[in-house]
Image 1 (cartoon, helix red, strand yellow):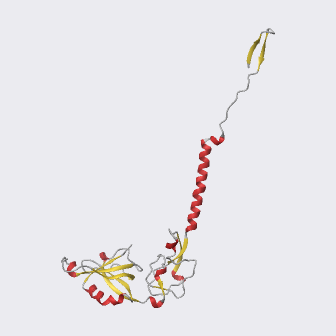
Image 2: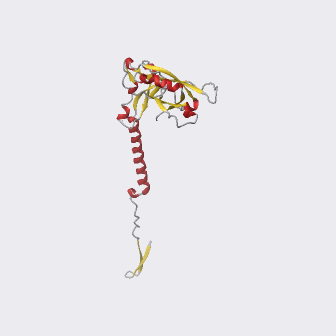
Image 3: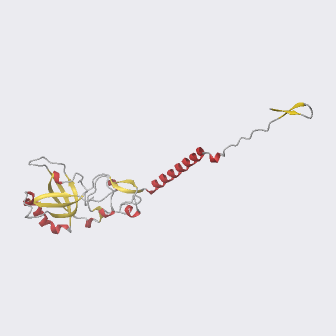
Amino acid sequence: MAVSLDRRSGGRSTQASPPAVRFERSRWRDPRLVIGVAVVALSALLGARLLGSADDAVGVWAARQDVDAGRPLTADDVARREVRFTSQHDADRYLSSDDPLPPGAVLGRAVGAGELIPRSALGAAAETSLTEVPVSVNSDAVPSTVHSGSVVDVWVTPEAVAAGDVRTARSVRVFDDVSVVSASETGTSLGPSATRQVIIGVTEEQTAALPTALAALAGGVVVLTVQR
């Protein structure tokens, strides 16, 4: 408390000092509050995006196990899978699990376990007649990814080329885009390398080339290729 001298009265008097004014910072200008609001908003946005992404997934039919070509496709052969496609066009390529399987539909090619079933693999029974052709292939001439349901090209290298005389002939593709009906494991090695027997399904359109293809297969080294 301040003390002042009153000259007119010849005595001393006291006066209260004015209260100190404290300026408070606005809460909305507190950086901690601003950061907290931004974090909450960002969390809400990410949550909305995740929920939206989940809604983009669609149900399609996938094979429960390996299904050979030429056999009817039943509900016991398939299971629902939730898949998120990049476009509706890609989703339409596969059988939607929202719809029942087409009655009387059969597979035009083999489908492997876990594979999504494309609409192009289905057809009527009369359209899926296949001729099974066994092919013996060196184990190192078969991609490790080949299994029942794979689609492969069959190439033959004549023995002269395989022996090193590359001037006499070239490798030829005897079958284009044929389905693998079954593929055995590596067999017992009786020579320099083990062999595998791969059974391919040849369509009616491809059977016209079968005589020439069989002659080439019997006189050359077979190689299977897969396109990804």
